[in-house]
Image (cartoon, rainbow, N blue to C red; front, side, top):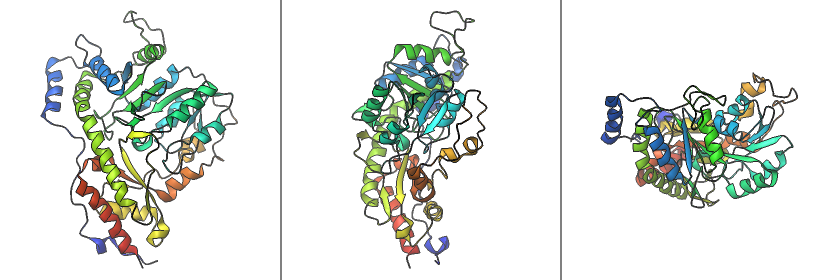
Length: 405
């Protein structure tokens, strides 16, 4: 097939920039105050970290929150606190960032990959049930792109099999499932504050829970094994220093003030963009109305059908869309189980049974998403205006016209 070059479709449709992170003088002043105080670390007598944890827990509707250095550590601390033992199995989706599975290895446990729902790209509850064995200890549902998983079904499965549920809400700041904030439904909820996330301090993470025992253990694990009421040089658990700084807490506390408004704007823009793209043959937005009452759109994802674009490959389509000025790309190039760490069994863990082998794992829906279908628009673009969404749709129609015979 002869395809028109990018030069044939200039000028680009979207000229606007979508800056991230968003900040103002209030953020600068909040950090400056901490700098001038000289109290940068945590804990100290004026602990902004504790204040932010309380604010974030209240925002999510949970009793407790434990901050830490990043979302990956949040998942790892949470998993260990939930009582996994070496060799236990933990169910995870293969369409997510590597940390969701690699932290399972770090805990000397076995990641069990379960395919995703073709309409939402979230873990498929029906496949979870099939994957449970006597060694299964926990499920880590990922609210991918900010779309809530089917938590009613997942929690019912967990209750039936006596499993712990760790919500990976690293994309889900502010999002809701049936009016409940993500991170407040499972035994724990884990968030990331990495630079691309909807709530950010450059790096950082936090864990939410309603369980006091879990809170105490996670608090200990992130604070070098210290326990409430214990002495400074008294260590009860094999934790490490995973604390964030006063500087991060001050910035996050200020950023949290605008999160709800930003989330609602992303939700509204995503809903409107769905209405535009569903009218373009070969473009199918991911399904909505599966229980999510507020979608954080950390990523806006649609399914691409190259047969409706004259055979244009997904990678080429994604290149052309980015060239049109839409902040976008083709997403994950392969499922997690195809990563070298799993294919080469480079686990460096003593408790992974020898028979564990990922070479034959196949999750067809995930593979189709990676290789053929999924195209991402990034969260900063979803803070644009309504006419920006119009231009995103226009860019796709422009590409389709350019490659049509």
